[in-house]
Length: 200
Image (cartoon, rainbow, N blue to C red; front, side):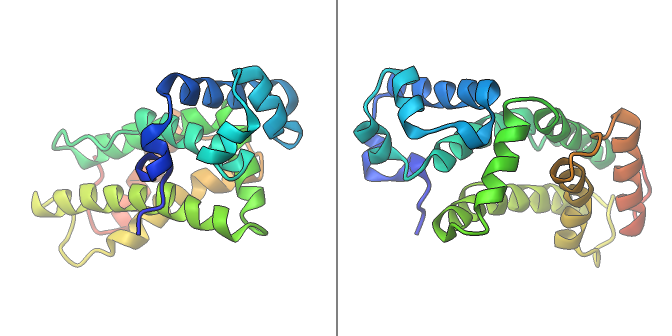
């Protein structure tokens, strides 16, 4: 069952202007106060909507910020297919790094991940709304490269995705400097070589 906010019955009735105002308010407050100090009350006041309205659409502030983060990440990290898997992966990973490296998105996602350890509903939403769809899109892009002969047919594509994303989220969560363009290129080339592919 798809539980993402965009497909729930209540979401079909919600005002797009109110939804946008709520997401923008949550992101602004996260930038100004930090994730831990953002509250539903403050989001409602900033967005000009009622708490009841927010709770009708989202179960928590984490869910509000997750939707805002997911929307931005999907926009910034398209899975393009130019026919060059190395170049496409570099573009994709660089987009993810750019989102995670700056407020409010990086701090918001770090805050969300800190909540998943004691919020089972949020953890499930993160998996189904963000992680699993993005992993599947990455696997699909790698599979296309297999079809084009750029990656060996016996390569473990799911493991390759973990190898690509792992260093990015490791640096983000430990608040280490994020990868620059050269580091992203090195990461992509290393993963492709590990698959038995010729790095681009």
